[in-house]
Image (cartoon, rainbow, N blue to C red; front, side):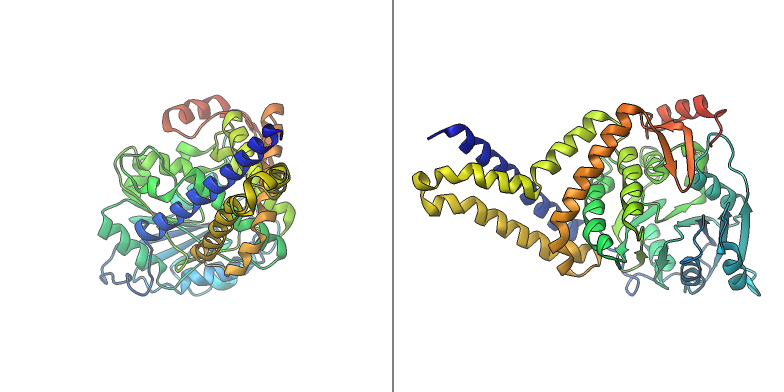
Length: 416
């Protein structure tokens, strides 16, 4: 019997079993050790709590902007203001916001019509909102997200209780279309692999990040790190913010937030693929070695790899016997069952969506391949209709010192 195919098949099965086993361990560690923001339990704040400025940057968000803004206006937190930044929208975003703002003295609309050189649109919009903000704390909220009525109170309570300057949360996903259900849980899981919440919360670890869908940060900490101006050319400005807060000892808390934050990131297949191509490439700092490593890992745990492993393993059946042969498959099946049962609830989505994870894995492999191509060709970043020729798919980085130097070199290059 040729033992080379057997060894190769066994190796693939071992890799798959190991990966899913580590996934299970990380899920249980997250469930036990990562704090969860509970809007019903942790929302007690004093009437004289500091003013929180909620800043919502919005670019062509007419379909969901009203629901987002209403979720802010319905907050139980005693003192807050809402600032919508209409960032060069060409749809009904501004008019729908104005209809909600009528008669409210705590709702301001800021209009942005031009994007300065060297800035990404979101960073500039957030800065424009901060310029109008009076709060002692800033809450940055994406326009495709919704807050529980006690979200601000619960997150401020957590910040005070933990003694941190920044609280950020993982969302509960809103999944409506087939492709959202198939792909979004997998891509969000990939982000968690790159930035495990436990390591983000560990003060001895250099892993740091924030989730740009929603985070609450004190004005003092925001100003100390240089605000969004310090990350103005990053495609993942939220990770850049986290990487500046944590090293300065300002306090960073990453919590499970499916009860306080609901987000529908993308609805169409093309949006999902393009959006996560941008996010994951930047999260891995456009480093070809890091992307190739993830490509190899996720290809090796894909369904085609599993089928290949079984086919390579088949000739050993007469020698090993069915009990030995089936053992690794049974172990992996048990692992997948456990993973599926517990992973989806962490995201706030039904368990049945786990059946689509193999398809999401193949899409992730495809996205990683596209990222490799973009890095090799040094393509320009494209984001929400803007092409940033100053921000290429090449290492530039997220850490404070290098990014500041990088920002200086691109400041005079206009977006096109």
